[in-house]
Length: 349
Ligand code: GRG
Image (cartoon, rainbow, N blue to C red; front, side, top):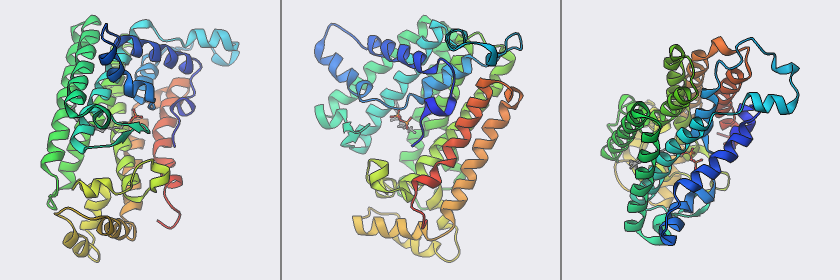
């Protein structure tokens, strides 16, 4: 499974993510021990911290402006040189809180029992607590974003709107065998890519990156987010429960027909058989039969190829920085996302 610190491989990233961790915990501390426990539940459970890492890396683009040669610096000076500004950490907290809130609400919608390998908030404390605790995280995020100025607060609010729009359109398409590739792409752009693009945007603004570079960083985050969700959707169908840490095929059960399924439906030989199984709830046996049908076609290979084309699109946005540590790190992250999919799915697929 991808390791963000390893993929980005930036001199001070691990330290910056430790600062983020402390700031994240502080951001949800109140004078109510119960609210603290509920609000910290998923923070303490971990998570990849991909969005904060994107913000931190984006804030550093352009820092290697040619006036220094990182290969000549000792480890301590190098770390100091790549240390993020405090506002970048604050902006990353605001972004991660929106992500966390979306997980709280998503788990209520999916009736999920676990998240990040621990009991979900809804499973432990019930739906009402999970919804209001998610709202609390959003409120904290808004307050923190506002402390960074109206531009950042506005960006995060707009991204939250896209997140909700993407999720609503996905719910609206549930069990629809007429879902098109276009509506699928639009939905994942809203529910996943938008916040990754915003993480890059907020990182760049709080890090004082030259504004001319921002459209490229935003496009990088958006394309990376598309690749990320496609990878997730491939793994849900073709991954194995033991490596996924959750039951494979959950999207099919919930009637969420993602890229590999939509591509199989277009297949002249197998599409008809899959179509006859979908459009209604599936029991475990039919879920696995449908997964097998999808993995017996070239839909997984084609989905990986489409994911790779988004990774390539992401990398192309920052190719001017290919001779810097930050540019190479962001490029490596985009490609590794898709490269390790093959290792996570059984060889026969
Ligand atoms: C009120 C904020 C809010 C949202 C309401 C529920 C909802 C609308 C949106 C759900 C959006 C959602 C859960 C999209 C999936 C995004 C995704 C890929 C989640 C998994 O991200 P990872 O793998 O998770 O980065 P970790 O645990 O590593 O942080």
